[in-house]
Length: 165
Image (tube, rainbow, N blue to C red; front, side, top):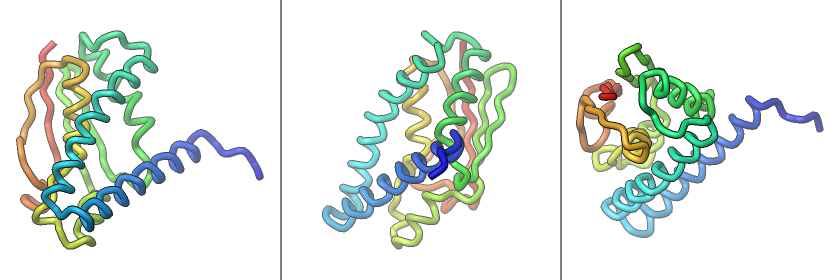
């Protein structure tokens, strides 16, 4: 077998991680119901995102995020690791530290829709991103604030973060 390219390893690990996440949610839903599945999923995301943010910052050589340039290094570094080819999202980061994330065809939306529980689902994707900023002690505002699924509520899924340094 030929050795895998770095991009192939990243893709494989991200697909496996997202499959684990989906299967964990599915089995929790089956066993405990939607209310508990949402509650446990968001609690796990809150815990995990804070740990991973610190790991990413350390791996990227960032002791703290003190400027828009530090934020750019963090965002570009993290998304180069966690964004797999099947994830249809993009982002814009301006020089002042405003980050706009835009989901295209959201894999979580489609997965939860297939389970038939989209109306009750509480999205964890942006919760993960919020956890990064909180763990790193960043001051920010976010629009829109929401519960549930933006794509279901509005037909689009995008979020703007404005950071204060």
